[in-house]
Image (cartoon, rainbow, N blue to C red; front, side):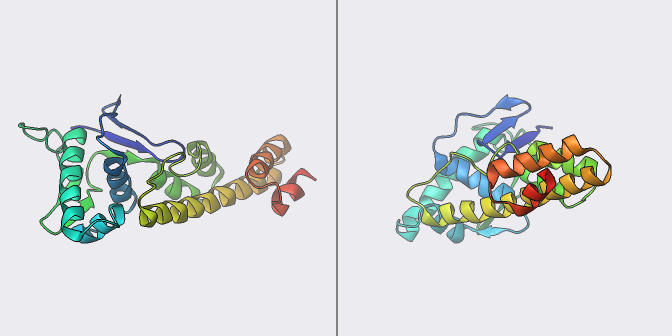
Length: 207
């Protein structure tokens, strides 16, 4: 069974069975994978995905681009190797005539999902693991200049995750203070101030 690992907190990286995947034909293929993986809670109509990634193209051409990108993506991640049987069982993508969805029952790991789960638990160990996962802002350095809709989705997702990261640091600093671990509390506060120099809670911790 092939294992797919996606890291989106910081620069985007994806590996299959530990091997980096770098043969994407375009950033649109990467964007399709990221969007489906992060928004895996529901199927996405092909028309919506085509409009998201190729908003300025005629509908027929945008759908054609989506088909080619999907074919490339399935070959890269092992869902359907060209001319061979699929390597991934169960497949990473659930593909129908009308929609696409990332298969959450497949063998995969997504740092965004793990980060969200850990940061919601509020215990020190989970918060420490969540903070360690946050290697940078969501899809740092990645851009689709010709797709304002995708860029807007990245921005909204980035801001949401950044708020969760700040909350995790605040909870950690507070927990460390309560345990008398003041050096760790200061370290968490300083990391927050690196992101937001005006954060009042972090300043209070340092004081």
